Image (cartoon, rainbow, N blue to C red):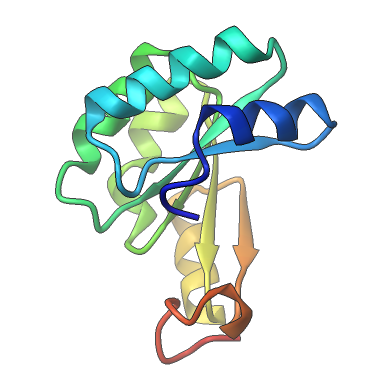
Length: 131
């Protein structure tokens, strides 16, 4: 949900009882920081970040997530092993989006707390092995 899962939507979802997620796929690290801070002005309820690991600057965004003390991160589009140890060390819950059983096993082996199984209904961007 690039370009629309920003502070207002994330806060509204959390206020309604769900877990609002800030989608950072189209954001720079500084834009992600701004959206996290803005979300906190709109809700005191938990909010997470959705981080695609194919972003060239994903490591910078991980630093923002840690500095801003986000406690739940959804990862996708890559191997979660590259971020799980760092996030788990900081007490972050990590959920990885997968599209097949092999990816689910890799996520579990990497130490993810949960997986989200997405199929073709997710916009057709999960790869050739969609569930």
